[in-house]
Structure formats: structure tokens, C-alpha cells
Image 1 (cartoon, rainbow, N blue to C red):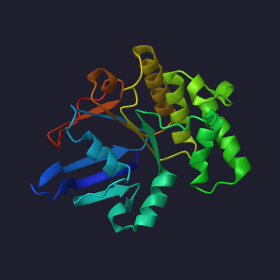
Image 2 (cartoon, rainbow, N blue to C red):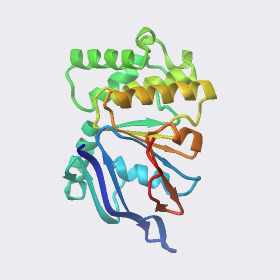
Image 3 (cartoon, rainbow, N blue to C red):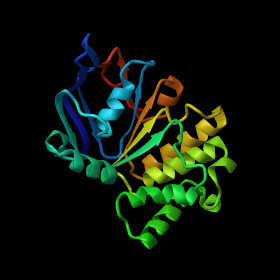
Length: 227
């Protein structure tokens, strides 16, 4: 399998005072088609790692290769373009515009990539169908359940067919039944070939991934056994 993510001694620290190490230098490889969970308690460094993987922040040590591209050599503009084209995000709080329909929220992801209107609309409909919400395309987020809103957020993340799907505590605001349905959807997407990295503090949620690594006090440890 090809490598989507390769971290080589990647770390992140803040000068202070006092100086703070948010993530100690670490190595990590994620191959195409993997479903990886990164688990650990609050404040362990999970968010720092996610921000680095998502090109939302830059490492202060090491090298991050994304699908063979050395991200440390890119300008801010090129990093932003790469992020928009190659990475999809699913957040705990959904981040949907309340006065826009489900379809319009998904359409926004294509706007940033300057996708033509008709192609963008078809891609949005296809993404909503993929998460089982094609019939709610015209619904406002305020009329959707928490699980449905998260599925709209997943559709938005999928619309550009990203190489890497980053999921930040995606079940944190959901009841157990909705959380299980969202995890079922992630497993289905992974079976279809999508590469997922999921950040979670919940060991039961992490156990749904195919591979688990742990982080504590800013230190990434070796993965547990594969399922």
C-alpha cells in the first residue's frame, strides 16, 4: 500500500516563557486505505497532532510528507491549496451554517476549490446519498438530529474525495445510538477505500478503528495490534 502520511521526527513546541512541548518528536506512517484511531486523555497532544496532520499548523521539528509531498517546503498558499484538495475534516461540533440547507452546507466545500456550479451540486448530492441523507438535502440543520448533522458534516468532508479524512472527536456530541451509526458509516467509507484518522479520548470509539495508536503527555506510542 502507498503511504498517505509519513511523520519523521515531527514535533511541536512553543517558546514560552516557559517553553512548552505540545508534541514530542514522533514517527508515524499511515497507508492508503487505513482507518487509524489516535486516543489519549484531554491535554495529551491529540489536537496538536491533528492540526499538524491537517496542515492547520506547522511542526517545529521534523518532516511531514503528505502523499509524497514534503509539506515543510510549501508556501502558506500552497499548503492551503493542498489542504483543500487532499484533506477532509469532520469536527465534534459539526460547524454547519444553521440557515443553509444540508445541500448548501456540503456545496461550500466545492466553492473553495472553484469547482463549477453544476458539477459541485452533483457532487454534493452524491455525497449526501453516500451518507444516507439524500432525502434530507433541503433540510436545515436545525431540523436534523445530532447524528444527521454529523452525517452532513461527513458528506461535506467527502465531497472533494480527499486522500485523507481527519475526524476530531466525531462522536463527542452524540448519544450512543447516533455515535454507533456514525462509526458504522466510517467503517463503510473505509471499506470503500477512504483513509481515515480519528482523534478520540474514548477507548470504545477507538476500538472501532482498524489500528490504534496512543498519545500521552505529548508522546506517541507504538500501535496496538491490528484487528
